[in-house]
Length: 300
Image (cartoon, rainbow, N blue to C red; front, side):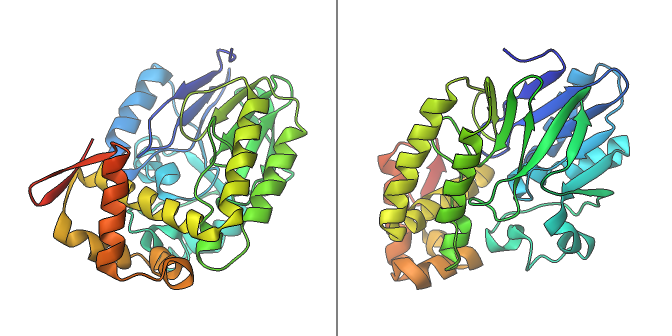
């Protein structure tokens, strides 16, 4: 399904997938997972490389689950790192207000970069030419990578087999639904045999995935409160994946301490912290994503 030069490390949902591109003379990785998995990421990468050096890190976007292993891989391999051009100043000055880590209550070790990638750039990775394409919606500065030669698309969080990532700009009152729709239209115009998403297994039915994504987008856009509620569940689940258990009494304060969520509550949900906490916990338990034991919410 995929060329031997492309190795996908499917990581689940706390860490993004890692995509290794093994050329004859150099190697690269697209996205590096979450910081709490960084040691595991390093071990997995070393296993795939079989003694080779990692030359490049490429980030599709700078959400914490996609760049949290950058610092450790840089320290171990001394590899070059390329990030979306619009994020350069934020990383250069490590502006935690402008970067998404603080806003979402997540962590990321400080890393550096050597080059930037702009939409329209062509990269040679794994001896293949890849086109960098703008993919706003989930993140306004996100990129996806398309290899016409092999008909492979690295779609990051712009398209999954069943949906896409939270449309974060809308939570803060900015446009995101229209951008996500345009990104899906862009993807639909590509000749793709295999999609490598940011989360989940690679898949071949892009038409089906696009249909499901568009249906999901229609549903969210019809009532933006739904996008805010989805973000609330996703952010709490992310914290639970990282910590494995959270005291029920701490949930309201954890949620309202996230600037992105505070904005979503102010703009759309308009509930008290206790109401929000009870609703979010109930949703995770109802979907079997968590369980309550005594005074704690536990991951499952």
